[in-house]
Image (cartoon, rainbow, N blue to C red; front, top):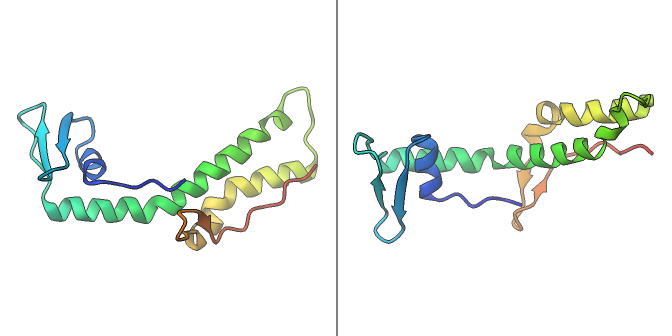
Length: 121
């Protein structure tokens, strides 16, 4: 499911590891550590754009990882994977590099534009 990023998410990404309280009313941040500088509005806006632009790839990887996890048992040491299963798992691992530029999010917040490999039996 698509994440909705807020100014607080952008600030956390811009100042990783720093603790703060975000007051939505008035768009105010209060830092736990006094030595932290608050990002500018333009930095926050740019980070929000970056987070939103990266969302299709995050969703692609999330679904890909779930599909790989569902087939991890195929790679158990006491089993021999078929060629079709090996090809399927490799195609899933290759998705970010060969489908990432096609990934987008529709009006319902769902990932679209990705051709998923067909899971063999």
